[in-house]
Image (cartoon, rainbow, N blue to C red):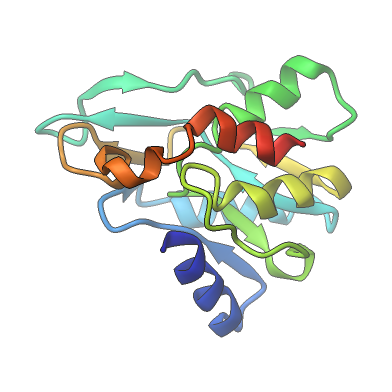
Length: 168
């Protein structure tokens, strides 16, 4: 289970920042530095997210992409900001690769619910601390390789129901 594996890694981590990276995703050569620099903006930054894209045969040729919301630079967002900014943040946390957490602010375990297992701790942090939505694409994932989203068991409960349960 993905959430259980993430929880094991969290408990073994000794650093201040936990950066998620799944086996199939690719990150830019400056992805870790961009996330690290985002945390340096303020001690109240609890997590960092990013737009991302899917690629076909070549990682440098996207076949589909999440919108870049922070077009003018990295965007610091509070849960109390304009609803459009909050929605923009949540639109980027549907894939774990390239999301980073300040370990000391992780007050909720990773969950076992498919599609949102890494979003539970992110949302808990976001309720209490600011997050940064990076301007740049720092993560990409393959569009045509098998992923767990294609396994029937993850649909025992609909993905939408998992998101509703998270928000409730």
